Structures are given as structure tokens and as C-alpha cells.
Length: 613
Image 1: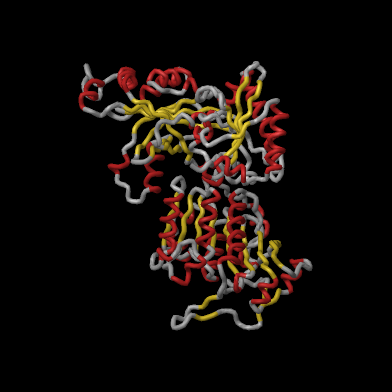
Image 2: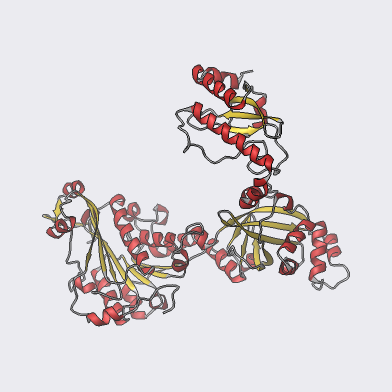
């Protein structure tokens, strides 16, 4: 048979191998031996193909062997080390089940192009870790600080638990839903039902059955010795959570007490973590009758029902994956998340700008988005739209909203076919209740109608207008806030912009054959800058960073502008301050308008989501 380990070593630079072996001998005080294929069988699930075994004398005067393990991609991928004479699983932190040591990346400490020093550094860190583990001071600390990692080493059920639960105390009752491939836990039945209906279009009420569950908040994370492998161990964890823990555990479970799920939370080194335990009893009729014996159906006292379930139930340990908004939008560390998740936005226009802007603000964390556009998707839209060919012939707004709703079930996404004028005329609640309105219609008439509506409403919220110039070589994002000028300061009576960054000698508007439709060609790449500009300005308004009316612009590359047959306007050259090459973000104050009293506009307080007026 082919000796893989020997063949790998023979194909490596012998001088480098000799230097590595000399350095290992110097570091460890003993001569390393090269590993053979038989030695590597204990790492069967890993891509190791060669390496060395080195005896090391540790502080307790016991010699233990460390393997230095190489992959086929060494040295571009660093070596790993393993403790051959390792204790049982989850006895020591940072020692995996096959003995491989889990060390933080050392690529920032050593040059991967210098494999001799990399391995020497790795061996030094490995020996120090084992000495520290032998001392014992870090064992309990690291098991607790990284309890999610070690819990996931001890799973006995592949079912994932998706969590909408807020990862903080106190211990309390929550709710759970069980599907074919995963379970979902949340604070209320309504929260679970809303998430499931958004995630699974057409799910029936019969499929939405939920049960009571338990959330235990522990002041100190459990050690591996406390991981529940039995009903009694689960009860011990509930006791650690105080009197409320036992009470909530007793109340949890489905109607026939054949199962109960418990989510356990605690604070680790990098923030709160969640784990889950499920007690699953037999659904066979004799077993169900046994659990209910001596009582009428449904009248078994909670403490007795739980005791009978835990006595014979299978205890599963499951991985929890957070699906709550703060985690989705920033892994719980984005301070903007709470304010954005409470915000509602209306996007008029679901074309090349509006579809992407709607998607971006949803990804940014805006919790309620309405997309409104009466048009169907056509093949000519596909290259610049969030929807693809599968949606051609469907309503842009409703189809995009349907797809985004499935992808972001913690948020609310609605599509409708209103024009801005119709929404204003009908005084629809989703418009009057919005925290921000974004217009990406490309229609001067629609923008003019929105501006009139905005002034009549007192300009308590911001309205953001976004549009591109020909070929997408430049773009604009204008926020009309509670203070400053209104849109009439930058558009004429037809609603068309009076301020352009580019100029073209010939007409750049093209007419589609036979339909009378006019358009200015541009592609998705250049459009990306404009979409980012509009979405960023909208988020800034929602966060209260922009209160006074603001005009932001993107000036593309000059070579692209010239290649399209255009040139910079004199206003652009002034803003570019000599940087005629372009590729710049620009901004300016809007000139005063003649229709808004300055004192009135400046006196308005902005309406911010999640903030009391």
C-alpha cells in the first residue's frame, strides 16, 4: 500500500524538514519521530497526511506525547497539534475529542512562509496550554466562558432550535413550535405564529400548534459535568435557576405531557449564549396512560406530570441558533438595531433603485417595510433588479415583498400596487404611520405630489428622493427633513431636477420600439453606488443623524462619463474641487425654497422610531 505520510515527507524540501526536527528537539528536549499512516488513523475525520510525534516532559514530571500534524496544503495552512495522551472527552477545555488542541490562530504571530518558526511557536503554545491545564486554574473558567463551544461538542440530537427569545434574565415561561427539521422558540405564541407565517407562505393553522416551554437564566454557565444526560440532571439545572426555574419547568410541555423543551441562557466571555434541552417521552398509548394514571385526562398536577415524564424520557441536547432581530442585524452588538427594528419605511417605486434600496434597508434592520409599485417585471428590468427571470410577468412590489418576507421572517414586509398619488389620495394608514418615505419612482409628478403631502403633514418625518443621471454615471439622494428647504428648492414645476452633475450634447434618452417608452441605459455596477447612497441616507434619517434637508451625490469615474459622451457640469466641477477624475461622494446644502417658512421648518422636532416625542 502507498505510504501517504512517507510520500508527503519525501516530496518536501529536506532542509526545511531537518530544520523543523532540530527545532522541535531543541524546544522539547527529545528527538521527534515521523508519523506513519497508522499513527494518523485516530484523526480519520481530519485531512492530516504527515507530521511528527514528540515526547514532552511536563511540570508534573509525566512525559506526554504531542503530535505535530500537517495537511496537504502545508505550509500555506499552518500545522495543528494534538495531545496523544489526552484525558476523556470534555475533561479539559481546548482539547477536542481526538486530542487535537484548539489554539487561537497563530498566523498573526509568525510568518507562514517560515514554517520552522511557525511550528516552533505552535509547539511552545501547545506546551504552555497543557501546563496550564495541569495546574487546573483555567479549566473551570474556560469551560464557562466558552460554554457554547463545549455544549456543541456534546450534542446528541441534530435537530436545531431557532430562537427568538431575548437572551437575558429572568427565568420565565416561553413557547415552542416543532417542525419536521427544526424547533422554534419565542417569547409569545403571537411572536411564533407571525414568524412562521412569514417564513412559510401558506402554512395552515393546524400546523401552527405551539406548546409551553421553559427559559432558565443561570448566573453561571453549566460545566460539562452538569450537562443533562437524564431527567434528574435537568431538574438540577432548573434548581440552579432558583424557585422560578422549577416552577417554569413544571409548567412547560405539550398538552399530553409527552415532551418538554427547555432553553438555558447564561453569560459567556463574548456575551450571552443559549442552549436547549428536550425531554421526549414515548407517545405509545400504554406509556401515555402510565403518565396520566390516577387522574382524569388533562388533570395531572404539574409537578407530578413533569416527574413522570422526566423519569423515563429521552434527554436530547440541542444546538440553539439565534434568529432574533438583534442577532440577525449585528450579532447582538449593533447599537442601532433596536431603533431600526422599530422603524417603518415606505418605498415608492420597485425598479432598479427602489428594489435594491428596499432590500438594503431591510438588511440594515428596518423592521417594517412597505414596497409600493403598480408595474409588472419585464425582461428588460432583470439585469438591474433584485428579482430575476423567474418573476417576469409578476407584480414587482408584491413578488419582491413575498421573497424578502421569507428571508427576513422577524421583520414585516408588505407589497402593494399603489402609486404615490393613489396612496396619498386614499390616505392609507401605512403611509401616514411611516417613519420615513423613500421615493425611487423616477417620476417628477409623483415626487411633486409627495412633497405637497409632506408639507401638509408638517414634515415631522423625512422623505428621501433618489434618482440617477444618464447612464448611471451620477446619482442623487435628497432628504427633506423637518428643518431646511423642501423639494421645490431642487426641482421645477414638473418635478424635474434643476441641478445636474453631468451634461450631454446629444439626447441620451432612448425610445423603445413600438411602445413609446423612454429610458436612459445604464448597468447594475454603476447603479450600485447610487443605491448605496440612497439607502445610507434613509438609515441616517431614521437614526436622527440627518434632520436638516440634505443633498448627497455620487459622481462616477470621468473616463466612464467621457466614454458615454458626457462631461461634468460647472456645478459638478465646483463640488469636485479640482478632482475631475470623479469617483467621489459629494454633498451640499439645499438652497432655500420660497414655499416653506424658515422658522416653521426649523421648529419641527423629528419623529424618530423607538423614541417618544
